[in-house]
Image 1 (tube, rainbow, N blue to C red):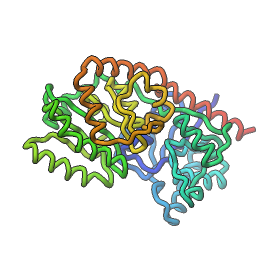
Image 2 (cartoon, rainbow, N blue to C red):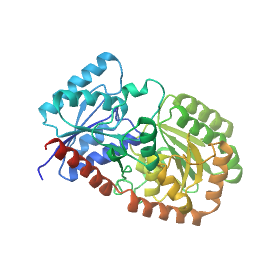
Image 3 (cartoon, rainbow, N blue to C red):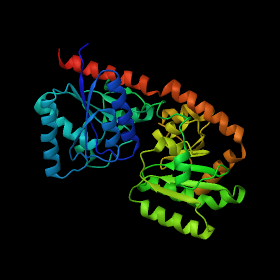
Length: 377
């Protein structure tokens, strides 16, 4: 089969689940002989693409102003024609909306990935486009697309976001980040990595609120909050106040980072949802599923099927994330080192079995070839 050229389009390349997935997908596609191009507004992760030898083109795919939309449509048309693109793969609403017009003008087919439960508020349908085929990252996202956006079931493929097990390797050295943040071997470390925006920023606040209860049982606890967003300043201020009250640095707010594997490898307990939960599992870390959609608590083998169905989001539960619930779950894990070890082993094995980037990329490639072949009939 002839080599194909794929253009991956997303809003930006700052740290986030869809963004880090796209980086892994781009790299694996290249390993599979695909010519990969990426377009976005740019961000901190563009350097990783450059290190992989993958070209990135900056377009304002994160803005809905008429001028930005027209400029992005024009820019993407140029890329499709200049590089003879076979298929465009859009990873968010604005890039997908722009891409539909590029397809109308150039004939280049496109597909989309739905990374979560999209809003169905009035007017959102006007900026929603799906393409020839749709990838849903979980079963509940597939059901959401069918029920709320009337997407034909036969067009949807459930393909979870893949994890690069070479990148997220428990053997990664953490010495540099330990020195940077003055962490000691005896410290018990909680790691929360997320966009610090809206409800996910609130989870970081609840984790800080849980610290007094955790410290009563485990005084050596340290909390690392990794990410940036509109709640960053409030979270940093709250952390500074807490550290001042304790007379030492107990809550570390790092801002946005690209060395997330090393930071995750610090964790005795990881808190998160979605891709972050999977990355922590790949690093053999026990995970607490705590998000804006719900609180699942400690991810155990018994909860795995439900968590997988809902993309490790906390959906499917009837409990909201609160500081006391977080504290109880973290204390439980801190009290049981063997339980932490067993859950870590289970997590790594599960990611290898169900979520390896190699397997997921093979499935995505099948969708690409199916669309391209149908287009060429």
